Length: 498
Image (cartoon, rainbow, N blue to C red; front, side):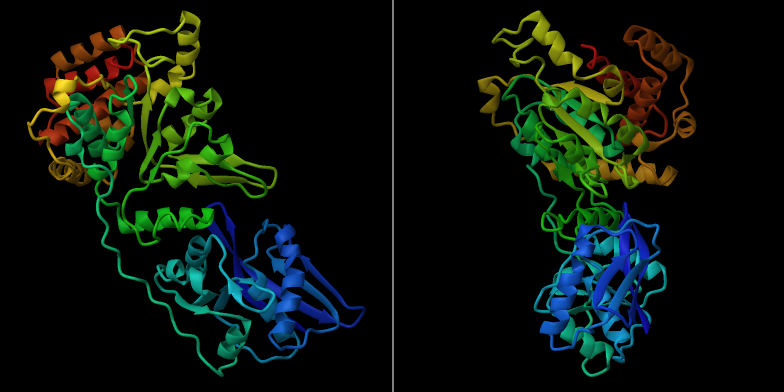
């Protein structure tokens, strides 16, 4: 007899519905699982056998073949355990209503259900494919319930699933939790004394979604400014938050970030992170890296020039295309990576170049240090700002600093003006649109041409200057880009060469 149950596999951030088919035939007792599976699925044979027996159901002494279809899609993980067990029970003659229901859970040896990673993207896929009900482990119920149009029923174990599907006892439905009250987070900008230029650059970056590099000696406040940056960012849209939660679910990182959170993520990997940890990868099917976990938020790279050059070069595609493609032997997977790059770096290995302390670096060491940041990466940074060391007297001034709430209000107003023009922030506008929204007069064209020759701007650099100028105009509430807005944008570009 053949029976089948629905489950799901992940392929990047997308899900692929999987039909788990079980066939029982006469012959020597065997239990085979086929369908382009990994080792974890092959090990499911022992988990399923023990779970069925320890729950009190007889395990068939026949030739059992389980097929995970479609067979050409690579499958991995333990999330097929429950569907395999239920399809085998139905194949033995047990009457269970499996139609319209999908199953995603690992089985413990005693028959209990254990959580799996990637439930949220798989639940979205199943809902889109017409599945009405999803049974998961209790720990996965919260994220699965975020998907509209899907009835999520968590179960403690295999026995309760059988009781529900046979109509003996119903599993309670899980409902999505209300959105948690979340503070803006981060350090309040008012706690950072001085550094008006750096604060202005961060305000522009937050308003338009631009990339920023802060340079300065150790202890000048670069890291604290980066921590304050998150308090300037508005909440992300609900659909964007669901996309971010799906990435964290796939990575198994929802403990770090609530599934219903609408705050932009902030990721700060250490410079010793592996290349796979930064851009994505790993054994088997590639998993999202830090740049995808920063999707719709901020990727903060402290001590930028301490990162290996190969790691920084790997950021070229994500910074330009807002996605990252990870190629492995089994598949080439594309993950979203639409983030703002916020970087901090010392001006030299000792950190005191241009400082009152004085630089002690050899010329060769300085050349090697700066070579880690290639021209193409520098070209993708919109704003470069110097963060000088603060004088002791400045640290004890009583003059009040502007709080994050006031700056954030201006940022939200500037973003509202951008939304009126289209769905994308200025940093993501294509060249055709930025030309339409930044019509320059003769004097401005002359300034841009002269500065372009002096700064040796590439075509990409020209358009990035225009995008920053457009954001500065939006912060000022100006419908057109004024001369001072263009000059300020060029100043942040000139600082990159300074």
